Image 1: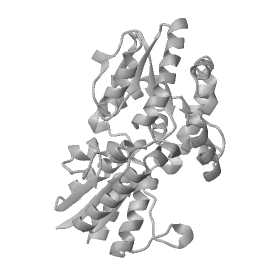
Image 2: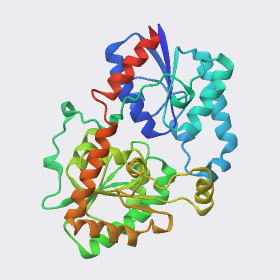
Image 3: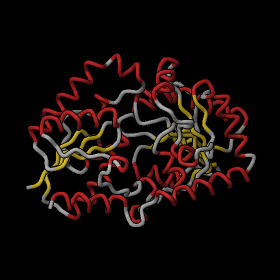
Image 4: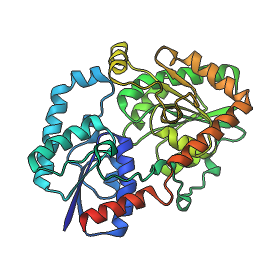
Length: 342
Protein backbone atom coordinates (compact mmCIF):
# COMPACT_ATOMS: atom_id res chain seq x y z
CA UNK A 1 0.00 0.00 0.00
CA UNK A 2 1.24 3.47 -0.93
CA UNK A 3 1.81 6.01 1.85
CA UNK A 4 1.49 9.81 2.10
CA UNK A 5 2.61 11.93 5.03
CA UNK A 6 0.66 15.22 5.14
CA UNK A 7 2.64 18.04 6.72
CA UNK A 8 0.84 21.25 7.78
CA UNK A 9 1.76 23.94 10.30
CA UNK A 10 -1.46 25.83 11.06
CA UNK A 11 -5.27 25.49 10.72
CA UNK A 12 -5.42 27.13 7.27
CA UNK A 13 -2.94 24.56 5.92
CA UNK A 14 -4.91 21.78 7.59
CA UNK A 15 -8.04 23.00 5.80
CA UNK A 16 -6.31 23.23 2.41
CA UNK A 17 -4.78 19.78 2.82
CA UNK A 18 -8.14 18.23 3.71
CA UNK A 19 -9.67 19.56 0.50
CA UNK A 20 -6.97 17.83 -1.53
CA UNK A 21 -7.03 14.57 0.46
CA UNK A 22 -10.83 14.36 0.21
CA UNK A 23 -10.49 14.38 -3.58
CA UNK A 24 -7.54 11.99 -3.51
CA UNK A 25 -9.50 9.47 -1.43
CA UNK A 26 -12.18 9.43 -4.14
CA UNK A 27 -9.60 8.56 -6.79
CA UNK A 28 -7.59 6.08 -4.75
CA UNK A 29 -8.85 4.61 -1.47
CA UNK A 30 -5.79 2.34 -1.09
CA UNK A 31 -3.47 4.95 0.41
CA UNK A 32 -2.27 5.06 4.01
CA UNK A 33 -1.92 8.49 5.64
CA UNK A 34 -0.19 10.02 8.63
CA UNK A 35 0.08 13.73 9.36
CA UNK A 36 0.91 16.78 11.33
CA UNK A 37 -2.60 18.14 11.03
CA UNK A 38 -5.68 19.50 12.75
CA UNK A 39 -9.42 18.99 12.94
CA UNK A 40 -10.05 18.94 9.17
CA UNK A 41 -7.66 16.06 8.50
CA UNK A 42 -8.89 14.32 11.66
CA UNK A 43 -12.43 14.34 10.25
CA UNK A 44 -11.06 12.40 7.28
CA UNK A 45 -9.72 9.75 9.66
CA UNK A 46 -6.11 10.86 9.35
CA UNK A 47 -4.09 10.62 12.56
CA UNK A 48 -1.81 13.50 13.58
CA UNK A 49 1.40 12.69 15.44
CA UNK A 50 0.67 15.60 17.81
CA UNK A 51 -1.72 18.52 18.29
CA UNK A 52 -1.28 21.26 15.69
CA UNK A 53 -1.59 23.89 18.44
CA UNK A 54 1.86 22.88 19.67
CA UNK A 55 3.60 24.50 16.68
CA UNK A 56 1.45 27.51 15.75
CA UNK A 57 3.31 30.61 16.83
CA UNK A 58 2.86 34.22 15.72
CA UNK A 59 5.81 36.51 15.17
CA UNK A 60 9.54 36.17 15.39
CA UNK A 61 9.82 36.80 19.13
CA UNK A 62 7.27 34.07 19.81
CA UNK A 63 9.40 31.76 17.73
CA UNK A 64 12.56 32.81 19.57
CA UNK A 65 10.95 32.24 22.97
CA UNK A 66 9.88 28.78 21.87
CA UNK A 67 12.91 27.94 19.73
CA UNK A 68 13.94 24.81 21.64
CA UNK A 69 10.36 23.50 21.67
CA UNK A 70 10.06 24.13 17.93
CA UNK A 71 13.37 22.39 17.21
CA UNK A 72 12.17 19.44 19.28
CA UNK A 73 8.94 19.27 17.25
CA UNK A 74 10.86 19.48 13.96
CA UNK A 75 13.12 16.61 15.03
CA UNK A 76 10.15 14.60 16.31
CA UNK A 77 8.32 15.15 13.00
CA UNK A 78 11.36 14.11 10.97
CA UNK A 79 11.73 10.98 13.09
CA UNK A 80 8.07 10.01 12.58
CA UNK A 81 8.24 10.67 8.82
CA UNK A 82 11.32 8.50 8.43
CA UNK A 83 9.70 5.77 10.52
CA UNK A 84 6.49 5.97 8.44
CA UNK A 85 8.57 5.86 5.23
CA UNK A 86 6.03 7.58 2.93
CA UNK A 87 6.09 7.49 -0.85
CA UNK A 88 5.17 11.19 -0.84
CA UNK A 89 5.79 13.93 1.72
CA UNK A 90 3.00 16.45 1.06
CA UNK A 91 3.68 19.83 2.69
CA UNK A 92 0.99 22.51 2.76
CA UNK A 93 1.52 26.13 3.84
CA UNK A 94 3.67 27.29 6.82
CA UNK A 95 7.03 27.09 5.01
CA UNK A 96 8.89 28.21 8.15
CA UNK A 97 7.99 24.84 9.68
CA UNK A 98 7.23 22.49 6.79
CA UNK A 99 10.28 23.33 4.68
CA UNK A 100 12.61 22.90 7.65
CA UNK A 101 11.14 19.45 8.21
CA UNK A 102 11.34 18.59 4.50
CA UNK A 103 14.98 19.69 4.35
CA UNK A 104 15.95 17.41 7.24
CA UNK A 105 13.98 14.48 5.80
CA UNK A 106 15.64 15.00 2.42
CA UNK A 107 19.11 14.81 3.96
CA UNK A 108 18.25 11.56 5.72
CA UNK A 109 16.23 9.84 3.01
CA UNK A 110 17.90 11.52 -0.02
CA UNK A 111 14.56 12.70 -1.40
CA UNK A 112 14.84 14.02 -4.97
CA UNK A 113 15.83 17.70 -4.91
CA UNK A 114 13.29 20.02 -6.54
CA UNK A 115 13.39 23.69 -7.43
CA UNK A 116 10.92 26.10 -8.97
CA UNK A 117 10.87 27.45 -12.54
CA UNK A 118 13.99 29.59 -12.20
CA UNK A 119 15.85 26.43 -11.08
CA UNK A 120 14.39 24.45 -14.01
CA UNK A 121 12.15 22.17 -11.98
CA UNK A 122 8.92 20.52 -12.97
CA UNK A 123 5.95 22.17 -11.27
CA UNK A 124 2.26 22.74 -11.87
CA UNK A 125 0.09 25.67 -10.79
CA UNK A 126 -3.26 24.17 -9.74
CA UNK A 127 -5.07 27.25 -8.43
CA UNK A 128 -6.38 27.74 -4.91
CA UNK A 129 -9.25 25.74 -3.34
CA UNK A 130 -10.47 28.75 -1.33
CA UNK A 131 -11.65 30.41 -4.55
CA UNK A 132 -13.77 27.46 -5.59
CA UNK A 133 -17.38 27.29 -4.49
CA UNK A 134 -18.96 23.94 -3.76
CA UNK A 135 -22.62 24.30 -4.64
CA UNK A 136 -23.32 20.75 -3.44
CA UNK A 137 -22.72 21.66 0.20
CA UNK A 138 -25.07 24.62 0.55
CA UNK A 139 -26.53 25.00 4.03
CA UNK A 140 -29.82 26.79 4.58
CA UNK A 141 -29.29 29.33 7.36
CA UNK A 142 -32.07 31.86 6.72
CA UNK A 143 -33.95 30.64 9.80
CA UNK A 144 -31.01 31.46 12.13
CA UNK A 145 -30.06 34.85 10.72
CA UNK A 146 -30.97 38.00 12.67
CA UNK A 147 -34.00 39.84 11.31
CA UNK A 148 -33.61 43.28 9.74
CA UNK A 149 -29.84 43.37 10.28
CA UNK A 150 -26.97 43.79 7.84
CA UNK A 151 -24.21 41.23 8.37
CA UNK A 152 -20.54 42.10 8.79
CA UNK A 153 -18.09 39.19 8.96
CA UNK A 154 -15.09 39.40 11.26
CA UNK A 155 -11.96 37.25 10.78
CA UNK A 156 -9.53 37.55 13.75
CA UNK A 157 -7.18 34.77 12.59
CA UNK A 158 -6.79 31.05 13.17
CA UNK A 159 -3.79 31.13 15.51
CA UNK A 160 -4.47 31.79 19.18
CA UNK A 161 -1.52 34.17 19.29
CA UNK A 162 -2.88 36.42 16.53
CA UNK A 163 -6.43 36.13 17.89
CA UNK A 164 -5.22 37.45 21.25
CA UNK A 165 -3.71 40.48 19.51
CA UNK A 166 -6.43 41.30 16.96
CA UNK A 167 -9.71 40.32 18.62
CA UNK A 168 -9.67 42.98 21.39
CA UNK A 169 -9.12 45.61 18.69
CA UNK A 170 -11.98 44.19 16.62
CA UNK A 171 -14.33 44.08 19.61
CA UNK A 172 -13.54 47.74 20.35
CA UNK A 173 -14.36 48.47 16.69
CA UNK A 174 -17.74 46.75 17.13
CA UNK A 175 -18.31 48.83 20.27
CA UNK A 176 -17.76 52.00 18.21
CA UNK A 177 -20.14 50.74 15.53
CA UNK A 178 -22.85 50.02 18.09
CA UNK A 179 -22.62 53.54 19.54
CA UNK A 180 -23.70 55.14 16.26
CA UNK A 181 -25.40 52.38 14.29
CA UNK A 182 -27.95 49.72 15.20
CA UNK A 183 -28.48 48.03 11.84
CA UNK A 184 -25.50 45.65 11.90
CA UNK A 185 -24.96 42.13 13.21
CA UNK A 186 -21.42 40.79 13.51
CA UNK A 187 -20.35 37.18 12.94
CA UNK A 188 -16.90 36.25 14.19
CA UNK A 189 -15.44 33.43 12.08
CA UNK A 190 -13.58 30.96 14.29
CA UNK A 191 -11.84 27.63 13.94
CA UNK A 192 -12.62 24.68 16.17
CA UNK A 193 -9.20 25.29 17.74
CA UNK A 194 -9.76 28.93 18.77
CA UNK A 195 -13.53 29.10 19.25
CA UNK A 196 -13.33 28.85 23.05
CA UNK A 197 -10.64 31.55 23.18
CA UNK A 198 -12.81 33.89 21.10
CA UNK A 199 -15.77 33.20 23.39
CA UNK A 200 -13.65 34.20 26.41
CA UNK A 201 -12.88 37.57 24.80
CA UNK A 202 -16.48 38.20 23.69
CA UNK A 203 -17.86 37.49 27.18
CA UNK A 204 -16.05 40.58 28.45
CA UNK A 205 -18.39 42.73 26.32
CA UNK A 206 -22.12 43.01 26.75
CA UNK A 207 -22.99 42.69 23.06
CA UNK A 208 -26.29 41.32 21.80
CA UNK A 209 -25.39 41.58 18.10
CA UNK A 210 -22.46 39.15 17.92
CA UNK A 211 -22.31 35.44 17.21
CA UNK A 212 -19.37 33.05 16.75
CA UNK A 213 -19.39 30.50 13.93
CA UNK A 214 -16.91 27.67 13.38
CA UNK A 215 -18.70 25.11 11.17
CA UNK A 216 -17.28 25.46 7.64
CA UNK A 217 -20.49 25.32 5.61
CA UNK A 218 -22.24 27.78 7.90
CA UNK A 219 -19.25 30.14 7.79
CA UNK A 220 -19.35 30.12 3.99
CA UNK A 221 -23.08 30.88 3.94
CA UNK A 222 -22.67 33.66 6.51
CA UNK A 223 -19.90 35.18 4.40
CA UNK A 224 -22.00 34.97 1.24
CA UNK A 225 -24.72 37.00 2.95
CA UNK A 226 -22.34 39.61 4.41
CA UNK A 227 -22.26 43.19 3.18
CA UNK A 228 -18.71 43.68 4.43
CA UNK A 229 -15.76 41.86 6.04
CA UNK A 230 -12.92 42.90 8.32
CA UNK A 231 -10.17 40.32 8.05
CA UNK A 232 -6.67 39.65 9.27
CA UNK A 233 -4.15 39.33 6.46
CA UNK A 234 -4.04 35.80 5.08
CA UNK A 235 -5.45 33.36 2.54
CA UNK A 236 -9.00 33.84 3.87
CA UNK A 237 -9.04 37.15 1.98
CA UNK A 238 -9.23 35.11 -1.24
CA UNK A 239 -12.41 33.45 0.00
CA UNK A 240 -13.89 36.82 0.94
CA UNK A 241 -13.15 38.15 -2.55
CA UNK A 242 -14.58 35.00 -4.12
CA UNK A 243 -17.95 35.80 -2.53
CA UNK A 244 -17.78 39.36 -3.90
CA UNK A 245 -17.73 40.79 -0.39
CA UNK A 246 -15.90 44.12 0.07
CA UNK A 247 -13.36 44.20 2.87
CA UNK A 248 -10.45 45.80 4.65
CA UNK A 249 -7.33 43.98 5.84
CA UNK A 250 -5.77 44.36 9.28
CA UNK A 251 -2.65 43.01 10.97
CA UNK A 252 -0.40 43.88 13.88
CA UNK A 253 2.95 42.60 15.13
CA UNK A 254 5.03 43.79 18.05
CA UNK A 255 7.48 46.56 17.15
CA UNK A 256 10.45 44.17 17.30
CA UNK A 257 8.71 41.55 15.15
CA UNK A 258 7.68 44.21 12.64
CA UNK A 259 11.23 45.57 12.28
CA UNK A 260 12.62 42.05 11.79
CA UNK A 261 9.89 41.36 9.24
CA UNK A 262 10.73 44.56 7.31
CA UNK A 263 14.40 43.56 7.19
CA UNK A 264 13.69 40.03 5.98
CA UNK A 265 10.70 40.46 3.65
CA UNK A 266 10.72 42.84 0.70
CA UNK A 267 7.02 43.33 -0.11
CA UNK A 268 4.97 46.52 -0.18
CA UNK A 269 1.70 44.92 0.90
CA UNK A 270 0.41 42.28 3.30
CA UNK A 271 -2.58 41.06 1.30
CA UNK A 272 -2.18 38.65 -1.61
CA UNK A 273 -4.61 40.56 -3.86
CA UNK A 274 -2.61 43.75 -3.37
CA UNK A 275 0.69 41.90 -3.86
CA UNK A 276 -0.52 40.48 -7.19
CA UNK A 277 -1.66 43.92 -8.39
CA UNK A 278 1.29 45.76 -6.81
CA UNK A 279 -1.13 48.38 -5.48
CA UNK A 280 -3.72 48.71 -2.74
CA UNK A 281 -6.92 47.25 -4.15
CA UNK A 282 -8.12 46.33 -0.65
CA UNK A 283 -7.32 48.87 2.10
CA UNK A 284 -4.72 47.66 4.61
CA UNK A 285 -4.51 48.85 8.20
CA UNK A 286 -1.22 47.60 9.59
CA UNK A 287 0.69 48.18 12.82
CA UNK A 288 -0.25 51.55 14.42
CA UNK A 289 -3.11 51.98 11.93
CA UNK A 290 -4.54 48.69 13.15
CA UNK A 291 -6.75 50.18 15.86
CA UNK A 292 -10.49 50.41 16.51
CA UNK A 293 -10.81 54.06 15.42
CA UNK A 294 -9.07 53.55 12.07
CA UNK A 295 -11.02 50.37 11.35
CA UNK A 296 -14.28 52.16 12.15
CA UNK A 297 -13.42 55.13 9.91
CA UNK A 298 -12.39 52.87 7.01
CA UNK A 299 -15.44 50.62 7.20
CA UNK A 300 -17.93 53.51 7.45
CA UNK A 301 -16.18 55.40 4.63
CA UNK A 302 -16.52 52.45 2.27
CA UNK A 303 -20.09 51.68 3.31
CA UNK A 304 -21.02 55.30 2.54
CA UNK A 305 -19.33 55.13 -0.88
CA UNK A 306 -20.88 52.24 -2.84
CA UNK A 307 -18.96 53.20 -5.97
CA UNK A 308 -15.69 52.41 -4.15
CA UNK A 309 -17.09 49.08 -3.00
CA UNK A 310 -18.17 48.25 -6.54
CA UNK A 311 -14.71 49.10 -7.85
CA UNK A 312 -12.96 46.95 -5.22
CA UNK A 313 -15.21 43.94 -5.85
CA UNK A 314 -14.71 44.24 -9.62
CA UNK A 315 -10.90 44.46 -9.38
CA UNK A 316 -10.75 41.54 -6.94
CA UNK A 317 -12.91 39.44 -9.24
CA UNK A 318 -10.59 40.11 -12.19
CA UNK A 319 -7.57 39.18 -10.06
CA UNK A 320 -9.11 35.89 -8.96
CA UNK A 321 -9.80 34.91 -12.56
CA UNK A 322 -6.05 35.00 -13.16
CA UNK A 323 -5.32 32.46 -10.42
CA UNK A 324 -8.43 30.29 -10.62
CA UNK A 325 -8.13 26.65 -11.63
CA UNK A 326 -9.86 25.81 -14.90
CA UNK A 327 -11.31 22.67 -13.34
CA UNK A 328 -10.61 21.92 -9.67
CA UNK A 329 -7.40 22.71 -7.83
CA UNK A 330 -7.86 19.68 -5.56
CA UNK A 331 -8.65 17.51 -8.58
CA UNK A 332 -5.57 18.66 -10.50
CA UNK A 333 -3.31 18.27 -7.47
CA UNK A 334 -4.65 14.79 -6.69
CA UNK A 335 -4.07 13.73 -10.31
CA UNK A 336 -0.45 14.85 -10.01
CA UNK A 337 -0.03 12.85 -6.78
CA UNK A 338 -1.61 9.77 -8.37
CA UNK A 339 0.98 10.00 -11.18
CA UNK A 340 3.80 10.12 -8.62
CA UNK A 341 2.36 7.05 -6.88
CA UNK A 342 1.99 5.07 -10.10
